[in-house]
Length: 263
Ligand SMILES: CC(C)(COP(=O)(O)OP(=O)(O)OC[C@H]1O[C@@H](n2cnc3c(N)ncnc32)[C@H](O)[C@@H]1OP(=O)(O)O)[C@@H](O)C(=O)NCCC(=O)NCCSC(=O)CCC(=O)c1ccccc1C(=O)O
Image (cartoon, rainbow, N blue to C red; front, side):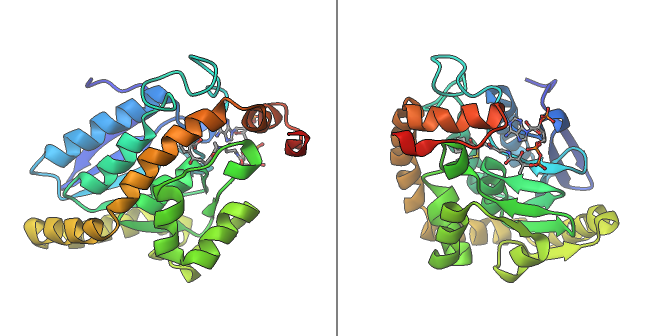
């Protein structure tokens, strides 16, 4: 897989940039998108000339808004129509972001919502435009990320805040995300690319082996969450088969409020 349909891949001065390129659906991912991201992260991870990986979204409206709601229900009718426990191998992608030896920086413009928020959370560092908006929508749309998106989020923002994020499904501005430790820096939108480039250049001046060891050391302490996620994905695939979950996706597509209480 060299030619990508859903993403862009480029390497410049030691920084590989992976761009989710589906602005027409606010960079929501389908199975194909996740497969391509897995390919690109594997490629960048193995490239000794790459010292840092940047994950971003095309356009100014969104970094990523999670699973593509128009693709939800494909395949066996419950998941996303592709490979993996729920038809989109999102757990493989999440693991890979942790497993590549280089630091991964999330460059966030616009919405980082749902599974998009999980991806940004998992990146080693996040640099956001002033217009960035973070949040979870799972319980509003009949979904949840039962691993890194919940348990690892709590490591970053604390248990109370993580529970608020998931139970309340509110939207948080970039400055709020900075205050809760979800992002490392916030800059005016027109300075975001240059700021991320500066961070990449700084990393490129440091020892890649020391950084890889540091990354693995950080990861080791939260590695048990991978197991929680694997278990959770099995539960999620069962949940996706319920009318309660399907109501969430249906309501989003029909642009109405869901009625979960009937079940
Ligand atoms: C992103 C919003 C908050 C933006 O709201 P707003 O500004 O009011 O704009 P809208 O009119 O809602 O949207 C504009 C336009 O974009 C389309 N769109 C937005 N998000 C998606 C999407 N995810 N899939 C498909 N299309 C999308 C929207 O339909 C509009 O299109 P028009 O043609 O203009 O009508 C808001 O849009 C929003 O909340 N989006 C929902 C995001 C969502 O449902 N994400 C998926 C679920 S997230 C989740 O369940 C967490 C669990 C999780 O992370 C996970 C774990 C394991 C596997 C998969 C997932 C996963 O992500 O599902």
